[in-house]
Image (cartoon, rainbow, N blue to C red):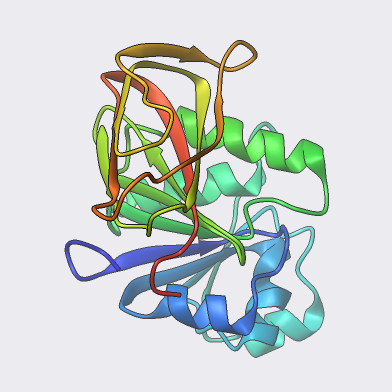
Length: 219
């Protein structure tokens, strides 16, 4: 799944992925981490973890025992959420820069919005940022990763969301073309565009962050 042959998986305490999705995400992973609230989900999914991190207010006794040989790190800072704590650690330890996130949303809307805000703060710290759920794959275009080729089939629905702004948004191969557009959250988004043709499509930006949501091609 990664251009370099390995990626980091980070499991958050949102909507639990299916076993099939978890196995798909873990394939070729070089490192698998979970926030403390997601440790129980990791146990249920039988995901092997290298790291559990957070303020440890959500991990239960069974998960602690199950992952007794896993590195568990407590970060008591109440001014950052567990997602942010995990990202700081991954960067400090230079684990890698291709990040795949599970459990990003669901359960609580305020948590989802906060996680997106954290993602934007770290957008240029990682070479590649991907979010997976059981319905779609989401890629974040940034200064470090400004362009994406979409290999989805003709008619596949593609949505573009600025976080909070994206400049120079340009698409090729989508039914509703966009050329050097300035997209801002609260002003303009690109919901439910679709691939127009059999050669895929291309999306690029020049500045900011753009979330590209699409169906899977091989899951």
